[in-house]
Length: 392
Image 1 (cartoon, rainbow, N blue to C red):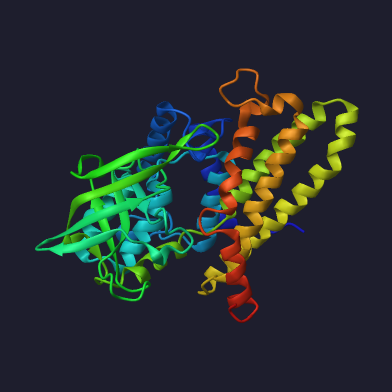
Image 2 (tube, rainbow, N blue to C red; image 1 turned 60 degrees about the vertical axis):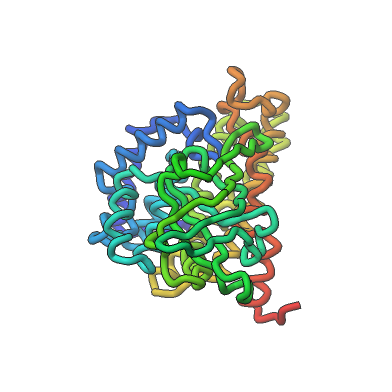
């Protein structure tokens, strides 16, 4: 069975695909991976976002009055699928800016905040990062301890954030802080916007290099950092609910499935060119992964279908997150072994098969079952909200 979109969506797909081939060509990876390989990759991602902004494509899901296309759910899925397949690079503008903080400001922001921040997202000027996790508050995010104390027209922030994706290249941060330490842990939290983070006194960003030797994550330290009170989003001490609105925009999954489809196509081409004994050994398992990835695609389509009906996916999104993260780990492990000894070569090695994408993707897929809510937490959500089981 093959599900197809309508004529309007397929015309859009052809237009988007033509644009991506022109901008990216046959190359994928780099800026789309967790940890751009170089400053040049980041600059290419900036140029790509600028080209999107010129076409008005940088925020297709947003209402037109805020600089978006007002695209339907299915049109958004076309963009996400094609961007994922071609490995469209990003700087944090689309992922954190367009996909997360922008929609949150549309719902919770003041008119002043919308007028100031939204155009800078759609132009690509603002590159955002997320200040959520702390050394003692990851999956249990409500345990966060970074403190913000009101002092006149400012909040004074002290504490630490960790695993700040792209923080070393961002110029803006949205951040959860504790403003009432006496309140229950899900209350007493506020949501702040921190401007021009590279030039903010008292704010220090230090690198965390991952096991693929990529610099993507960071630690961020706050020492008497002053943030204007006008940068508070929503009500003081009600930031938890603002933050959870933001996370509702984080899960789509269709782009991940499309990226894995591209990988499987590359592996298929490589296998066809290989010796008969290698084809015999790996082709059945490769077919299994193609089928499994199609299942992931249909799970993603289910999310889009629900959203098109005005429903809010909850445990369904957790199903997608578990399935895709664990399938990706298996696909990249399989691919490294299929390529043999050369499959261990990273992109920096000139003779790396398939540009070294497989070992890099394999290494970087390891934490995918931990970040964005561990798969154990996702299984708890499925159990309680999906199956109606009691909390332990």
